[in-house]
Length: 323
Image 1 (spheres, rainbow, N blue to C red):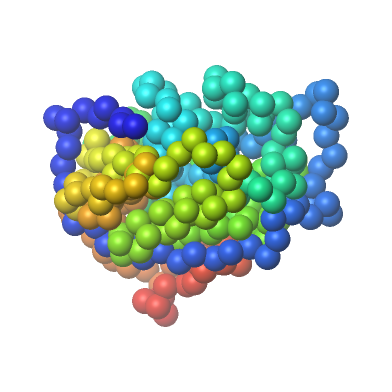
Image 2: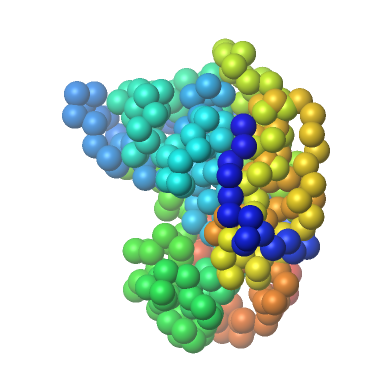
């Protein structure tokens, strides 16, 4: 399966990203944090706005803005055999794919209660994620015409987080994403059985993406994929298409690993040597200042206070350079 991308925009940079996998303690939802929903009147908040599904692999994925969200969307699209221009074609909330409509109708509560489904998410250190958002949304040429820039001055942007950060998904704490009923990611993190972390050693990110897909394959009931198909999809998803992508430290040489078919889809979107991306959203590479150069001690403290719930998530530690 291959996703056709605009070859004129292909630019490759050297990626560094570090990834850590954590396995949740349980595949079952804790009833204390779940909302009872009338199955005849499903609400969109029960569905969850930032969930993707690959029913054939029995994978449900919580995607988070600025955490390679476009790459994960493209990966799920490839695994679902979707090749349209609609990035969010595998969204549980809006997908027209019949199999995902079944997931939407049944609700995510039932998926989280089903141990045969893999529930996965990738997290990112909050200060790195915040500077990534600033680079892409506030620095020239400003993605989305600057409408998602809280302030063109980074220090003032940090000051604006308490009043404006919760309403914009590029700045919103990761802990608040992926609601199922009234439960947030923070409430339900122990119910995820695969948790990766994106930082700056891409080979580790690739390893984690492939590991997530292998984990899903090991639990699935279907034989519709081979590992080679996943490899192919991972190889194709990381292709830089915007100026902001060029600042990502995640771009490298586009070299696929080849090999076996469901693992090829993962390899397409997250190739071992080329972690690029369609509107990549992992901004920290060539042409960008180091993350720590954006912060004063005061602004770092303010940002960490705003993102305090994120630092309670598995694997997210305060940077060593913060005094």
